[in-house]
Length: 217
Length: 381
Image (cartoon, rainbow over all chains, first blue to last red; front, side, top):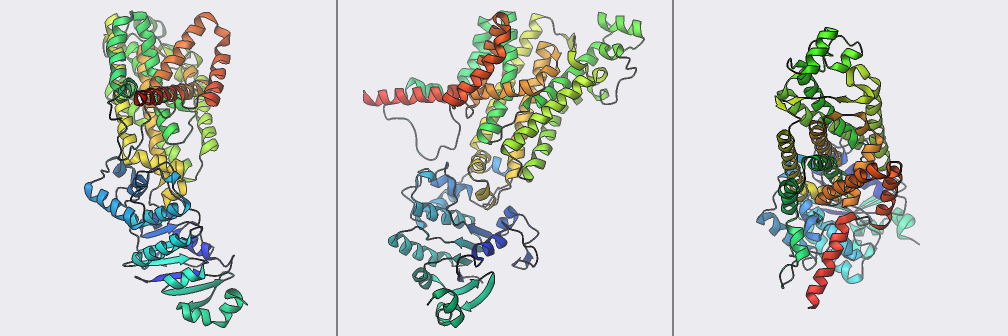
């Protein structure tokens, strides 16, 4: 749902990453269907699904190490992505402005000319979120965006995630419960590949099945 | 000899003005153009200029390899196949022109003897009585030139896309390209009546009426080759500086991430593979005009690997380096064939090992190192 930030939680092996893989086309389902805005996604290839408006952030930061922050963001601008188009793509001042805006949002304005490979782990996570922001997807899939981040970085990321769910839907996988509590609009709990419970953070935390399986004795 | 890549926003000059090395870098293409268009023709006699022309032709596939291997990350060990396609297509045109020429001695004598006017001599010798249908269009220059430009590139695109779509890349694709060049060489050698077999196609007299044996014709052909080389260098630069160039680097870096940014890597890789094939084909065609020969010895595995070595010696990320690499290695080859024929293979193998182990950035890497050193010295003054 638009403007919704849904967090998917569950024990290891519950199928959280697989869920994201199925949506964005990394894995093909053996049966069933995946629908997005009325469109069936299971027949499409990864880059087609991306062009349909879905953005994916991976568990280990997946960015272009040899390109600078600016170039990383520029290449994610969702126009002229065909071979011929890319030959004649010009980075206009408008696009350049957008890149600077996004860089500011992801706290990397100062590092904008640094090669991405030289960024810290947390900064790489932010950059990857920035790549998605440039793409401006209708559905954003984030896999453990704060893994490996310091407490301060988590706070900043929570702020960031708060703003980016405006005008789009965000589905996020996380293990850090304190973080989840701070940002989630709704929570989905998966267990062994199946849906266990769904609802607000409060509802889920009170759910007996969830406590038994995940939130713990 | 600079690495072409997206530069980002910062300048790389010091406030003290550019050093000589940096200046050389900026104007690398101009310097090369001056060398091959002005300096060499003045300094060299006709025979040596002919050698230079040959070296220039080998620079074409080398530049293509910089694009497809250095930037695309795709090792192609089959550029000889595309060089050969361009070479043979031009040879067919030249041979038909030769055979049709009633005034040329080889044309009339053979036609009289075998009763096969207009047929290339080797076909007559092989009892091929009729010109094969696929030779027919090469009577015309307006077919031959577009064919040279389009057919190898198209074949490369289809072959490349079919493989890259299925994520066949790296070593596996290199083997595919090896196989392609080997197969083409074998087919050419086997079909003696249709392709001239192991002797290739030779004995051309004229090109569009111009006598190829005269010094004037050789000079004109040299200039055409040199200008074409500059043109493809500029085209290659344009490609690398564009978004397409950055996407290629991105694909090399992270194939997965590129897909989820909405790009189809297979298309981009197929495109650059196709561009490399185009360059090789043009080189092959110019080679045939100037050296007067199309031969399977330039089509198979060994010549294909040599072409990769030209690019490696120059520095596989350097377009200009590839030209110098082609010149240097071929010059060494000429020297060796004059003095130490048997040792050429060992030399080239040894050279490849040395480059890969100690000088992975080739000549361009040495230039960059010198530039860095001279800049540091300038800063310390």
